[in-house]
Amino acid sequence: MDAFYASAEQAAKPSLRGKPVIVGGLGPRGVVATASYEARVFGVHSAMAMAQARRLCPNAAFLIPRFALYREVSDAVMTLLHTLSPLVEPLSLDEAFVDLEAGGTEPTVEAARAVAERLRADIKSATGLTGSVGLAGSKMLAKIGSEQAKPDGLVVIEPGTERDLLGPMSVRTLPGVGPATAETLRRAGIHTVAETREAGEAELVRLLGRAHGASLFLMAEGRDERPVVAERDAKSISVEDTFDVDLTDRTRVQLEIARLADRCVRRLREAGRSGRTVVIKVRRYDFSTLTRSETLRGPTDDPAVVREAAARLIDGVDTTAGVRLLGVGVSGLADYTQEDLFAQAAQAAQAAQAAQAAQAAQTAQTAHEGVGDAGRPPGPERPESAGEGAGEASEDAEKPRRWLPGSDVRHAEYGAGWVQGSGVGRVTVRFEEPWSPPGRVRTFPVDDPALQPADPLPLLRPDADADAEAEEAEGPDPDPGAVAFSAPDPAADPVPAETPGPEADQEVVGDLAPEEAAGPDPGWASAPHPDEGMCPGPEEAEGPDGPAPGAGGPEPGRGPGQPVTSRP
Image (tube, rainbow, N blue to C red):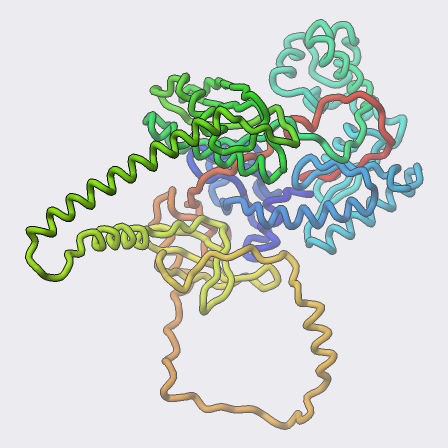
């Protein structure tokens, strides 16, 4: 898919079409997940620090990612790919390899090109977005072809042309070559794929080791024997968070570790797996990163067991200087759980002790209240406890809601829209739908009860065909000359005053701090407003070296030819 996240946002928000859009973490330590092609002209790219993206393209619309919408679109695209072949290897939400030969496609360039053209048309019809396709005899070449086809194109790399195509390309083009490997090759005077091939396998093995050097030489020759794998078994499940401000408080670090452990176990259970080894990851203020692990007696998916293991691990790490990132993971995955009887006994003992302590405290409180009641004059009960509880509830109720730029909302009167900016007690919303023209902008108090969060709308109008069929079924009006008219009800509520126009909204957004203002200029005179909102970063973003770990690296065996891939 082409600039997937940003393209989906432009399709969902008519006022952003043709404008630079950047999706990612909007906090001070956020990174760019995807940038639209209008923003890439300014040098913005995936995995770039958001602060640098703001400097390069200050007038872009900076939005939070909406993964619910992206997964919905991704599922539609993956369904189309599975109609072509049973061998579909997803690399991410917007990229996959497809073995066309396994799906019955004739092993000819003409047949493969026809299938690819039909696939691009089907993706456009089903999602409203564009995708680029690369056709080749191996996964590596198909991926390179899809990159060259962007945006919205098709590139076929015919057999026999691989070496000439790869020769002048940078060595970073080859899978598995990241910054460290590229620097090692640069010091040896190797910069291009042709120079890598000329260096020979023996030299590459000396520089990079036997496994990496041998596989890199084969890649430089244009040979990629990795098969298309329909299901890739996960080796670990983990979660991690980067904090806007370094954590120095030990209690806060322990609470975050416990929260991450619970999230990790939820993901573990959703996948129907269990794990034996608990791992924590700590990145300090100076970017130094360390990991600690503990292997349990058997696989488990018990949140208490994982939480306690993570707590023991973090107790052995010095965090007083400041922590910018914490993570908890589980490896050694299995499809079954082995109950830890010792852990269960310890938990039961702790629960019994807690119950005894609570009962003793309640008995003491009852005795104290009895003594107090004996000396209290008759009268109504004092409402201290009720007042305290009410105060806590009112404090939670009065806590202002956070409206993050790009999030979906719905207003009781104006309908569906999306948050364009918030701050100084106000939230600016643009009311439009994917199938409507650019909508009006209105500003509300952040605690307006009529404004509520909403689920994302589909990119294509779901009832378009139904409306057309209904109009045909209704037929002509039986009495064209009849005109319905109703006089205004004098007892009805008066028509509300018009909401301030773009100029008024612009004045409100302009007063916001850079950390709170968000979204493009409400008037859209020429470009979005430079002050954008801040929000927590996404859990993951596309890295500079291409797909996530586990998607690269040669594998034994050789699969059928002609894979096809699409990628932003």
